[in-house]
Length: 345
Image (cartoon, rainbow, N blue to C red; front, side):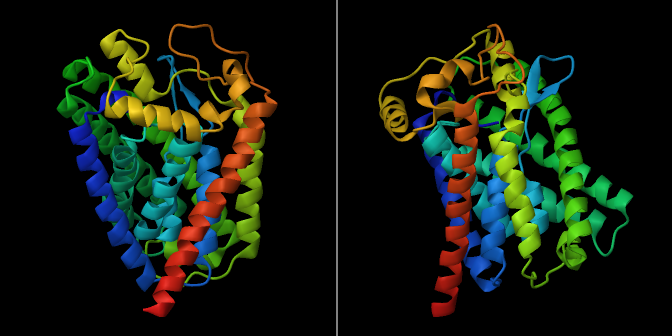
């Protein structure tokens, strides 16, 4: 659900950037008030895991489209909503800057859609009331799945509204809406199941994190084994499991193609062109591959012959591992920086 710049006008893109910047400042302040020694490394490792998990698109049966884990709900459950919002922001920034996944003008909207709704709406208002206390596995699963579905439905609705408000993409509102919501319902259900599996894995490995998983405040305990486990899983996912990702277009690309009849949006001039040129210069692993390996990236437009599956590609593996390490450093550094600032104030 990474929006491209071609969907947004400069005015709408700027407004979404402003809203997201305000949320980042607010979240940074709140994280400083609740910082402990283990949060910064957890932000880095979990951010790296979510980055890698997002490389694996899974097919949506009967549609020809695919989806991937959003990850913000998982981060909220394990880190709290404020640290989760900062972590998903760092993931999306890394993806936009170095992998050309989502536009730079649209980055504010992408962070808002994929971060605000799951972190500040679905997690506190849906997950916590259902999974408060010491929930049984069934109740935990229900709370996670419902929160994942609602968060993704609101995010996809946000994409439709922002695109329609911009008025620069020739995508009719009603067909776009009627395609986006159902396909992201299926993606949300899958995200809920994957998130529940990850949370249950954490509870098995670290029962002392049960309070955090139940949405209750606690000082997280240094969990070296958990950190190492998630980091190894992230490297394995980005380096090898990503070969098995679906080559079908994701839910957003599929909905745009179906609603507009166009496989790709036209590139625009002015601010759009300037940002696109900058992104081409800085994105050294575009489409999660080495620049000379784009043909085998597995992200073929709608209507073209799909790449062989699984896509065993050294360039893609390199991009996955590099992305995991960059995200680990960026998200972890943000946590470290906030901890230092908190100590000096």
